Image 1 (spheres, rainbow, N blue to C red):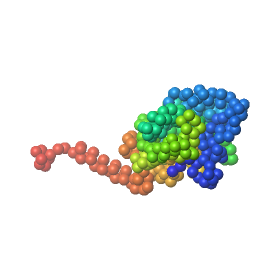
Image 2 (image 1 turned 90 degrees about the vertical axis):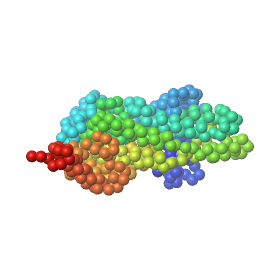
Image 3 (image 1 turned 180 degrees about the vertical axis):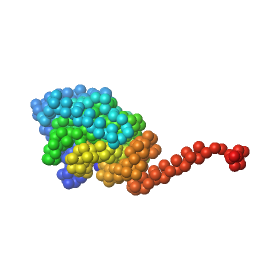
Image 4 (image 1 turned 90 degrees about the horizontal axis):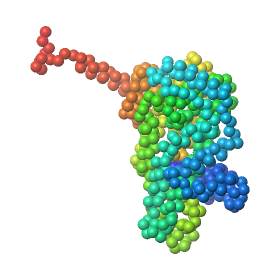
Amino acid sequence: MSDVPFGFGLPDRDPERREPGQGGTPGNPGDPFGLGALFGGIAGGGSPEDLLGKMPLFAELQKLMNWSGGPVNWDLARQGAISQLAAGHQPSSDAERTAVAEALRLADLWLDQATGLPSGIERTAAWSRVEWVEQTLPAWRALIDPLAEKVVGAMTSALPQEAAMSFGPVAGIMGRMGGLMFGAQVGQALGKLADEVVTSTDVGLPLAPAGTGVLVPQNVGAFADGLDRPADEVRLFLALREAASQRLFAHVPWLRQQLQDAVHAYARGITIDREAIEQKLGEAMSGMEGGIDPSNPESIQQLLGSGVLEPEETPEQQMALRRLETLLALVEGWVDTVVAEAARDRLPGHPALAETMRRRRASGGPAEQTFATLVGLELRPRRLRDAATVWGAMTQQHGSDARDRLWSHPDLLPTSEDLDEPLDFVARQGLDDELAALTAEDAEKPEDDEGGRQQG
C-alpha cells in the first residue's frame, strides 16, 4: 500500500525519498501538505512578508481558511493546479482541434469492427492542460468529497468529550485546516496529472461531460516524443483508447457508479486512533512539548502531519480496494483488447505504441498516481495483464459478442479470484454457454401427458 488518503499521516514513507527524521512531500520534506507549490515554495520556511511579496495568493489565505463549501477547498485546489501549469501552458489551436476531431471520428469507425458496443462520443474536444483541470473538477468533486468528508469527520469525532469542551475551537480549526490541506493536495495532484494525461479517461474514469471525447494535444505531443512514430499515428492510437473507453462507460450504465462506490466503500471504513489523539491532547493540557495549542493553527497542522490521524485499514476496506483494483484492471484490459483488434492491419505502429503504454503503467502512470493519492491503492501490473488475458481469450474462443456480454451485469464479470486463473474463467464461460443451450432445448420440448410419455 502507498500513502494513506490524500497523504494524511506521513506523506512519504519511503526512506530513500525522504531525508531521515523529516516528513514532507518528495523533494521538499519541510512541506508536508504540498503548500509550497501554491505559495511560491516558501511553505515550511520563510517569513509571511516573503510569502506576500512572492505570491499574491497568500493575501487570500484568510478567505481560504473561511471556506464553507465542503470538506475540500475546491477554490484552492483549482488555483493550485492552474498555478503549477502556468509556465508551460499552451492553448489548443484550431488545427489541433480539427486533428483531434478527425482522429476520434476515424477511431470510432475502426472500433465498429471490433465491438458491438456503439459509439459513446457525441462531441469532440481538444483540451489544454488548464482546460483539463477546469472541465474535470465536477467529476473529481463527486468522487473526492465523500472520502474527504469521512476523513474530516473521523478527525473531529475522535476528539474526547472532555477535550472538546476544553478545546472547543480545535474541532473547527481542524475542519478548516483539513479543507485547506485537502484542497492543497488535490490541487497539487491535479496539476501533476494535467501535465501527463492524454485523454479524458486516462485515469480509468470518465472525467469529461457525458458524450465528450477528449485528447490533450500538448500531452499527446509529449507522449509521442522519442517514439519514432508519425504524430498522426500516435494521435490515432490514443484516440482509439479514448473512443473505446467512451463506448464502455456510455453503454455499461452501472460501471461508473460501481467504481465510485468502491472508493466510497473505502471511505466508510475510515477510522482514527482515538487513544493517540487523547494522548496528544493530554500533552497539550499538561503543557508537554509536542502537544497541540487550540489557538495556534500551526500546531494543528503539525498534528495533521504527525501520523496520529492516519486511518487504520480494515478488512472491509481491503475488500473495497480489491474490488476497485479489479474493476480498473478489467476496464483497462478490455480497452487494450478492442484497440488491438481495431488497429490490427490498420495501424503499423500499434505493437510499439501498446508496449509504450504498458511501460507507462508499470512505472506508475496517471491512474496509479491518482488512486494512490485517493485511497492508497497501487494498481498491480499483473492484474492488468490477467484482465487483458481474459478479454483476449474470450474473443478468440467465444467471439466479441460473448466477450462484451459480460459487461451486461456486474455479477458476470471476473472477480479478483478469477483473475488469478484467467484461462479457467474463460473455459467456464464455454461450459455455461453449453448448459444454457441445453436448458433452452429442454424448454422447447413438448410436455408429457399426465406425467407419462408423449402420446403419438
